View (cartoon, rainbow, N blue to C red):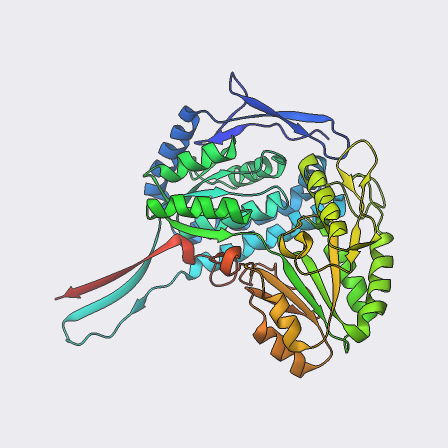
Length: 477
């Protein structure tokens, strides 16, 4: 099996280097070069914009049944091709093959969900005050969309945006992650082979700030969807606001985890250790700030630290690997800075805390205790395999501390009391709250945050909201 051929996809055609600027794509486990990714020129971006606008004029009038059939086909093809897609995803992103395969297979469900929901984009009739007046509300596609997706879940983050845009009757230009491009190219082939008309989906690459600014400023683009960091999201939202463009922003998080002393401590520790180190902690909804009630703190730390320390770190394609490398070397350097800052704030390294090996981007799964709330690890999103555990006294204290940051994406709590579960789910300021389990990423549930973690939702019955304009029609006979 070979790695994905890297190219642009514009107006239904694939274009490789051919004199364009290129960048190396590296395997984060070995540092070897997997391929060279062409960057779009200004002419390429203009061609993508023109083709997307032209395709929109016909796609917007397509039958919902046609869109549904196409998305269903994408789901079928995704399941068929999952092993090859997952292997390439592991090669350029680094996550263990089992995680990559689970990501791809789960995304087939996203295609199926949007295939069904796009058949149910309804309007309504409003009873009029006069017998000869008809009042209608209809939903119409926004137009050409520009989407920007990250490297941590390259297949998942992209297919959500593509399915929502196309299912609503929009067309889309997507700039995926240059560090992990194979999954995006695979999506291009999936939609092409499913019969999507040329121009409805365009895939481009380049210097992120340059491509995003060019597309957002274009009068052709009417909607922007971005998944990524808070600082970049704020810049893109501000730029979009200057041009009155619709936006969906799924930004970073720093998820609090509250473990009450009546929780099943062993179960919570084991579940959270595995969930925390999923994708090497490079997950926006990853549990990061662990608040454990005093009576349970020591037993939780002992069990949690042991589970974290036993995680097998290695190359994603190696048998037995439970956690792969970080996606690029910048994340390793960031982890080292978090650890150094933690030590200056009185932190204790319970396990891990250092780079592993001399080749690849490996960092040991890490647990830090005894930190102050002012330390960087407790205030900034780590986005890596590092967790901070700290004790708390009572309900009011932990709610205040958990809600003290500007983030508001995900939150977690563990308790056997239904009264406490109800109270904490109401009290936590987050777009998604998980009690005693993890259940945020299904296609039928809305995904998104509040405050600095963004706005808008992907998935659920809300999935098309950002891609539709509401039009009111009133007619007198």
